[in-house]
Amino acid sequence: MPPVNRRTLLRTLAAAAALTGLAATTGCGDDAAAGGKQATELRYQGSVGQVTLPELAADLGYLGDVKLNWIGNVTGGPADIQATATGQSDFGGAFNGAIVKLATAGAPITAVVSYYGSDAQTFQGYYVLDDSPIRGPKDLIGRKVGMNTLGAHAEAVLKTWLVKGGLTPTEIARVELVALPPVNTEQSLRARQIDVAVLGGVIRDKAVAGGGIRTVFTDHQLLGAFSAGSYVFRDDFIRRNPETVKAFVTGVGRAIEWARSQPRETVVARFESIIAKRGRNEDPSLVRYWRSTGVAEKNGVITDREFATWIDWLADAGELKAARPKPGDLYTNRFNAAAGGGAS
Image (cartoon, rainbow, N blue to C red; front, side):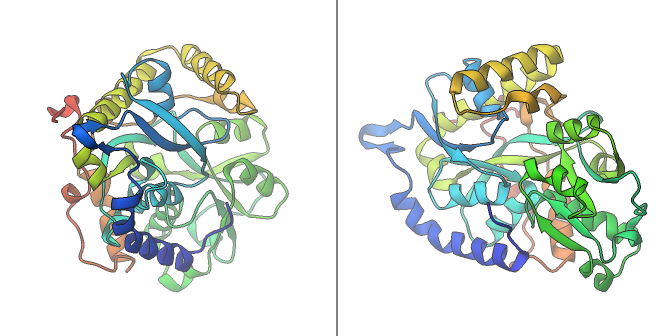
C-alpha cells in the first residue's frame, strides 16, 4: 500500500461516505437473498504472515455455518474499513479512532466486537536504534517516525504523547510521519531511513529479539491496558443479517477467550497450522512471537472508554468535521452474549 498523508486520508474518508449509498445496493452481494435467507459467507481482507481472530475462529469451528472468503491482504486499518464501507468486503477492522473518523464522515458502519489492544504482553512501542539521541518528546522535533498507516492508532498515540510532553502544535507539525508496511519498518529503522519505528505485536518482538534497538515509550505505558480496535459491519448488512453478525461476534469472542486460556505454544502451533493450510506462500515466523490478543474485555465486549478517548483527541486536534459523536452511537454489544446481548 502506498504512503497516505492526512489530507489524502480525509479525502478518501469523504469519498467512502459518498459511496456508501451505492454500497447499500450494490455491495451487499447475496446478504439479503429472497425469502429472508441470511449471508453464510463473509468477504474479508487478511494480513500477510499473520492469523486474524476471525480466521482463528473459523479454524476452531466457532463460526458455525458462516464461512470466510479471503479477498486479499491489507496493511492498514483505515483502508480495511473503507473497503467495508464501500461494499468491497463484508467486515473490516481498524483502530477505534479511524472508525470515529469514517463514521463521522457519514459512512453507516457500526463496530461490533474488539479485536486487538494493548496490555503488558502485547503493545505498540516506539523504538530507536541504541545509539540514537532520542529520549523524550522534544527530541522528535525534525525527526522521521515510521508507522504502518497515518491517521490511525500509531499517530494518535504518538501525538497524545507529544502533547503530554509539552510540545506546541507548531512543534508537533515538525515531527514527520512516514507510512511504511509493517514488514519494512524495522529494516527502515536499521538503515537509518527513519529515526523512530512504531512496532507492535509479533513484528515488534521479532525486531527486539534481533537486538540493537531500544524503547522510547509504549502505548501501554501511556494509556494502560485497553482495547484499541474493533471489527465493523455496514449498518444495512447488520439489518439484513443479524444472525450472521451474531455468529461472527460470538465466534470472534470465543476465539479471544480460547487464545487467552491456552498455553502460548498451543496458540502459536494453531496459527502455524492455519498458515500452512491456507497455502498463501507466507513466512510463518512472525506468529512464533505471538503473546496475547491484547483485548481488554471478555469476549471482545466494547466499552465507551475505547471510543471516548479518541473522540476527545480527534475533536481537540480539530480533525472531526462533524459534531462530536457519543461513543454509544458508534458501536453495539447487542450481538455479544458476554455483554448480555446476542440479540437477533
